[in-house]
Amino acid sequence: MTSPDLTALHPRLPSPAQESADERFTRRGVRLLLKRDDLIHPELIGNKWRKLAPNLAAAAGRTVVTFGGAYSNHLRATAAAGRLLGLRTVGVVRGQELADRPLNPSLARCAADGMRLHFVDRSTYRRKTEPQTLAAVLRAADAEGAYVVPEGGSNALAVRGCRALGEELRGRADVVAVACGTGGTMAGLAAGLGPGQRALGVPVLKGGFLADDIRELQAEAFGGPRGDWRLDERFHFGGYARTTPELDAFAEDFEARHGMAVERLYVAKLLYGLVALAEEGAFPPGSTVAAVVTGSPWPAAAAHSASR
Ligand SMILES: *Cc1c(COP(=O)(O)O)cnc(C)c1O
Image 1: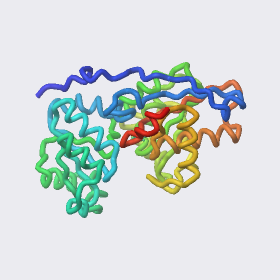
Image 2 (image 1 turned 90 degrees about the vertical axis):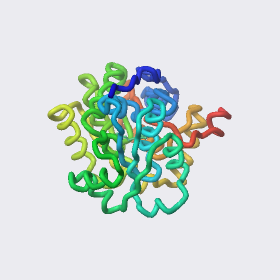
Image 3 (image 1 turned 30 degrees about the horizontal axis):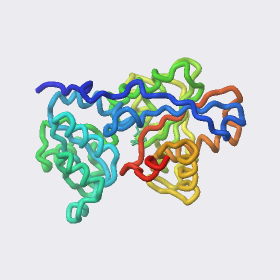
């Protein structure tokens, strides 16, 4: 078994940091940078590249098993990596009932990329990190001995992979903001920033557990807390994949202003939060705020990107 050659995929690293004129920031004397992690790779997009790359190397050719919901960006990225690198992948999907229905477009994409899908009921899925449950799931999925990547891809290797995101922004911004799901990207980003720089996380899930999770991920990855970070829990819009007409309108307007397709599950909430914070005067005049664009819409927003 040999390690896959990830450099053959030609990731665009460091990702570009684009200065963006947006009067909601400039009128307060604040510079907005868009850190375009969405441009790292067309299929292993954004933070999914940063988190998966070290895990794919560690898998060293073994089958990769991972976990996700019916529309998981992480499952699609893992499946695409499998196709591009010639690795076998197994996706453990939340929801036994999905096994009897036609695949939704996201899971159909995974299957087309060669991912073998294994559906489990929700209570098993919830307990998937318990060793006995995990062992039983791997056995049932015929994937014993496989390399296991957790849901969302956030393990210690992934968190250390995301440190490079912070390092690429050293000396470039006072505040670096990122949308958070599992918090793995935030945990690594904060560790990579330089002295005097702050990381700001915008959770897209409702719950309030994320700060503990990030501390835990930093302890696993680095042996203790790293960097200066905090979360602003006000911008989840009701929870994962929830939206409002106001958020949709905001995202469409941002696309029109900046000619960039805005991913709706994470990036729209981040950008909305940053505009709200700028309007509250949270960023002092003369400061620079970098927004990490962690992904792009799926399926690709052809109408948006083609017409602008
Ligand atoms: C997966 C994902 C995130 C969340 O990353 P975490 O490390 O789980 O916090 C953010 N943005 C996009 C576009 C994603 O696909």
